[in-house]
Length: 505
Ligand SMILES: *[C@@H]1O[C@H](CO)[C@@H](O)[C@H](O)[C@H]1NC(C)=O
Ligand SMILES: *[C@@H]1O[C@H](CO)[C@@H](O)[C@H](O)[C@H]1NC(C)=O
Ligand SMILES: *[C@@H]1O[C@H](CO)[C@@H](O)[C@H](O)[C@H]1NC(C)=O
Ligand SMILES: *[C@@H]1O[C@H](CO)[C@@H](O)[C@H](O)[C@H]1NC(C)=O
Ligand SMILES: *[C@@H]1O[C@H](CO)[C@@H](O)[C@H](O)[C@H]1NC(C)=O
Ligand SMILES: *[C@@H]1O[C@H](CO)[C@@H](O)[C@H](O)[C@H]1NC(C)=O
Image (cartoon, rainbow, N blue to C red):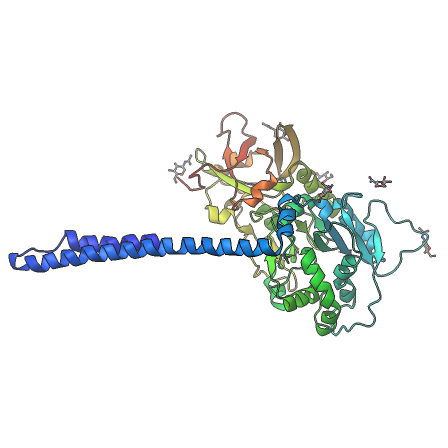
């Protein structure tokens, strides 16, 4: 900023100096004075900028040095421990899942999709002991029975008292006093966590500080009622150990103070607001407060690791023509091959045919027999409604309307399979999906696109350290430009080159 302002100023000075409109002999003295004035102005301006630039730097350094000295004098040991501390892994997370005895047998399938006995740590918290004659499934997380909450106040007329019990899971988990816990992660019994990515996201943050990490609702109407400052409980949220330590001291009081708030997540956020800690929003946590088909959301995921999905019983199955649980299992097969790349979007143009391909890795692909802008391609297509009122919006992200004219829409492909090619490479294929209710575009220039049955994609594994860098969408290129097999488009996804952009030619 300042350097362009600076050069503008200099240019103006130079213009009046080099191209005076007319030079009369009587004006020579004035010109001489003007020249002198201009030179000294330039000198002053450059000097001023030079000073202002150099002034800040040593100042910062002094501050940093002074701060470090202070810190070292006070707690040299903390520094040493921190420098040898291992990166955060799955064992450092203690999960607390809000469950209930009567619904666990139907809900457990979602938890069991991601729970790894003997690896993931934590408990599902129940309202009462399960029946003695029923054995607790080995594939489920172990359970604990929550403490009695009958003495707490709950005054939200449209809500359920169970919110108190669920809010207290963080406290009851903390009070177990388990070893080596850096993060407490809360979720519902219908939350699906993608734990590799959860670890990737949490390891970006210093667990020795007070962090509250999660995401908002997708539906603005929900955020207006339940706050934008809140991490939604169904999408799951993470609380670092030091914040948990402070939170549990005041939580029971908060539960009574905020007795008129509907949800457990609201009560927790209200309590955290008394501490003053702010939410750190991570776009991979998904409350999935939408109705209808979540396709658009998953086909244009933000550039961030997929951490969680929730409410999957309330939306269409994520893959068509499958049960809900099976459709999530299918996504997990891709996730297991390359967690970091799951639902990461890449798109590129085929300039020889004026086509565009967008891939949401491991989930879907789209073929546009035309060239939408990158802005259009990165926007979620609105295949869903809002949560509470089933309205057309607004959402907390921009959407593009699904057009009525099939000639203006893309062709859709769903992930068929993902193969590990070894050497850190995968090949995934996406198969054309024909919705019987949908009429194909009959224009003749669409015919070659309609012939494409598969989009096959090769890609390197997306390593966790990528997420420590500034987020950038990965690039892709179309390998076969209409030569050879016209039924398959081959795409290669890779990191972008320098000066590479998705710009029409
Ligand atoms: C996680 O790190 C801890 C050290 O803090 C180590 O003891 C443990 O074995 C690690 N767990 C896994 C699953 O890597
Ligand atoms: C978990 O650990 C226990 C005790 O070490 C063992 O008996 C059990 O088979 C393990 N379960 C799995 C799924 O690895
Ligand atoms: C357990 O006992 C209850 C009532 O005593 C009964 O309704 C239920 O079917 C029993 N469950 C099993 C698995 O036997
Ligand atoms: C849906 O699945 C059934 C059974 O797996 C299959 O026969 C049918 O062709 C599928 N329908 C579509 C539209 O893919
Ligand atoms: C692609 O679009 C450009 C610009 O509109 C046009 O000049 C060119 O002829 C098109 N090529 C094909 C193969 O349609
Ligand atoms: C594309 O993927 C499909 C399904 O996995 C496979 O049958 C086909 O051989 C692949 N084609 C190419 C050219 O890789």
